[in-house]
Length: 77
Image (cartoon, rainbow, N blue to C red; front, side, top):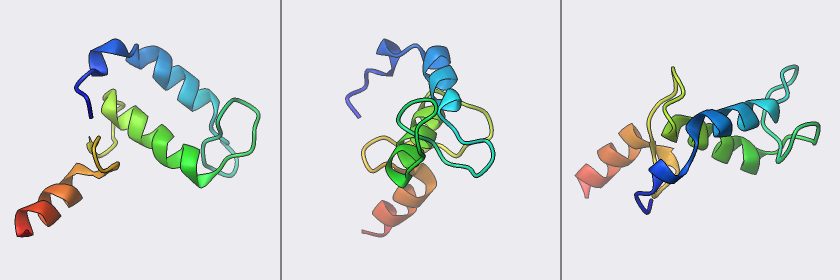
């Protein structure tokens, strides 16, 4: 959103986010071992997408939605 993705160590972020996931039921928590919630799942997946984690759709950093969706909606305006 502020064009500072280069400030983030993408590999360390991915390792952390993935360590916070519930591999049995799905979802991402705020830290390893905590209960998952929708908020951290959405932003965890968005963070993984922004650092180029494979097989995830590109995320629009302004709207925190799939870029394909925001491109389509904003193009119609």
